[in-house]
Amino acid sequence: MRAIVIEKPGGPEVLRLRERPTPTPGPGEILVDVRVAGVNFFDTAIRKQGAAEIPGAEGVGVVRETGEGVHEFAVGDRVGWLTINTHGSYAEQMVLPVGNVVALPDAIDDETVAALLLQGLTAHHFTTVSHAVQPGDIALVHAAAGGVGMLITRFVKARGGTVIGLVSRPEKVELATAAGADHVIVSTGDAFAEPVHTLTDGAGVHVVFDGAGATTFTASLHALRTHGTLVFYGPLIGDVPTIAMNEIPRSTRLTYGVTEDHIRTTEEFRTHAAELFTRAAAGELVVHIGGRYALSEASRAHTDIESRRTTGKLLLIP
Image (tube, rainbow, N blue to C red; front, top):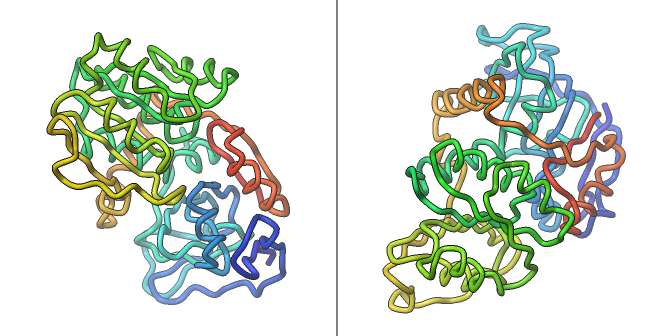
C-alpha cells in the first residue's frame, strides 16, 4: 500500500509518499480501505515533532478484513474513525481498534463524515460542555471561516446564541456569515477587543472560542464580560503567556478544551458522532470543504493549512 510517511521532524517537505506493507488486523481490530482522510492543523504539530510515522487522526473507508473476535463490523461495511493518539489515516489502508470506529448511515456522504468527526466533536464539546451555550449568549468565535470555527458558529446559533465571528482576511467574511455569524470582524492581531466591546455596548461577550494561539490570548480575556468563559485551544500555534490567577480580569473562567475528554469511552464517541450525523442529515450542520488533495499532495495540504489562507475542511483522497 501507499502511505504518507514522516521521514524526520520538520516542515511540509518531510511528508513523503512511500510503499509500506499492508497491515494485518489483530484481535479486536479491522483493516479498512481508506476513502477520505481529514487534514487538521493538529497534524502539522505531529509532523513537526515527528510523533508518528504516518499522520492522520480521522477518516472514512470500507472494511476490508476483520480480526479475531470482531462481530460488530463485517467486510464491506462503510465506517468512520477517530484515532487522536495513534494516527495513520494518510494511507491507502490502515488497521483500527473497533473502539475507535463508528458505523455510518447511508444518509451522510464520505466527505461530510470526514469533515465532522474531529472538528465536529470538538465544536460539540466546546459549546455543550466547555461552555454550555444558553439562549441569549453572545460568543466570539476566532477563525470563524475555518472548519472548527464554522461548526462552533452553527452550534452556537442552534442553541440560541449570537455570534461575533473573527476572520483574518476580508474574503473570508462571506463564509463566516454564511455559517451563521451575526457580525464579522476582520483582524489579524489583538485589536479585536475594542470592536467587540462596541458591538456589545461595552459589556463584552459571554464566551470566546479562541484557537488562534498566544498572540490573541490576552485580548480574548479582555473581550469577555464579567463571569465570561475563555475556551482556549491554541497552544499548538504558540506558547501561552504566563498569567497569575489574580490577573485574570472580571472573574472570568479559563478552560482548555480537549476533545479526548469528550469521548472517553466508545459509547460516548458513537453517541456524540451519531448526533452529528443526524444534524448533518437534517441540514442543521453544513460543512464547507475548503480543499481536496490527492494522497501524494499531503505536503501541499500542510503548506496551505499553515498559511492561514484556507477555509473550511481540507481532505486527502487516497
